[in-house]
Length: 146
Image (tube, rainbow, N blue to C red; front, side, top):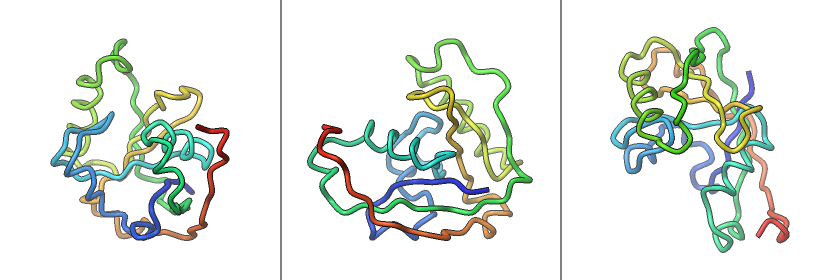
């Protein structure tokens, strides 16, 4: 399956999840290595815009297409009702999933567009070596976005 993320060119090939060690995200507590990706390039762009400010959008960035196996995905069945406004609940779910290490990917809803999904990739999973960057493409941002 193809998944997408946006990153500075210096990190376009980095799938280590290093940034997740430094800060908590929607689905993990910091100090837990995980890689966030989107199911399509439009959602990757929307997620990026939600997490950056105008000046950072002027830097060169790349849309990264990543190939990941489809045979090791956990899909959340139940999500706490307050998961959007209280990220503690979703962070616990994601961090537990990382710790268990049973699947390579976890499918989660996007806060920004629940009709689309994001995926977490666990770099410690034994199938992680099958996750590959297959394409990078420089992107620009239309100034109407800010």
